[in-house]
Length: 509
Image (spheres, rainbow, N blue to C red):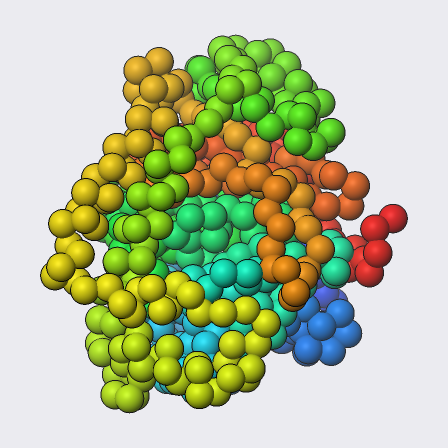
């Protein structure tokens, strides 16, 4: 901890003081240094973000990114400021505000609901493991973020970012367009400067897509790198929590505090240190198969190739990236089975009303509530999962699990292992589409599935723009290569300089 704090201080020793009157659009490096120098307090930070949320979450731009506020956040910030004044700094994260996706359990007055009417007001008696770690590191849990209901695994025809409890999250860059899901509120919150840091969760694309589409950074760690204990699940085979922030360093700093001890032992160095280190990548694959899907991609990748080659990196272009259809079919079979098994266990472990602690009971509740619970789309996934027989269907599930992982690992390992690429760089998702509560999402393309199913890490960062809409790239590597990926992503971030503060537009210019 001392080494990292010293590193941050040295990096910013010549920086100017932040504007005392407003900590708007701060990055974590500046915030940590300002807290160290006494130019800023955690209480000031928390009050600033609370004011931003009050202005534009339900009022103003009506982003609906925040589902609940921690009523004790200011008091917690004051206590952390007092600890700092007494010389007790718990970690580099000490005093920094973070918001959590509303499917992550917290032992406070904020409910853990996954946005579902069936869990309205459900308060848990204990923190999820990752929340325990964040509190121990001195983070201030500012609030919980809205999300795609049940992490976008309720039914067909959904619109990302909508939940029965939280309404529709909006994209801060263009308010009529999707924030993508399911960690939509977490991405929109950091994009709109409602918080310095956020935590999202991903099963397949739920960190990657909202990060890319809201123009921020998201890290999906290696399978098992962050404890899933306490998170309302879809499927433990693929679920993972990860950080979201406006800069690579900021996300890395947050992830350092979320990692399990076992994960830390497998990484080459702390991730925040990697974010300020020189990338050692020597060979990367650029996936160019989507260049014709958006006019902004080809020039961006051309520039990226030139920059990497000038830095001594061998660059290979790939214009034929595809995944077999069997992978998606097997993945869905795994998710449906594990949704039944894992969600019902969570409902019991976290003492949900005994009349609503099975999928069958939730399906019946939604039917009884009608439009209040189901609104504009159905609950086909909940129904399919409710009908699973965990014993009878186990053999088919195991076969699907093996098949999905084999196909996903094969797609990545042919480059990362056999040809020894240090990383694969892909366009993350296409640009945001119009929010549509009649037809639901209209995804154009996405590339998250291989890393999601294989359990390999990926870092998503802003790369370019399609008009006013952000486009991101994802940097994917072998398990436990997070430090190397973060170093490469930070290098790309400095070169591309693609981050922009959102303009909260109501129409494309």
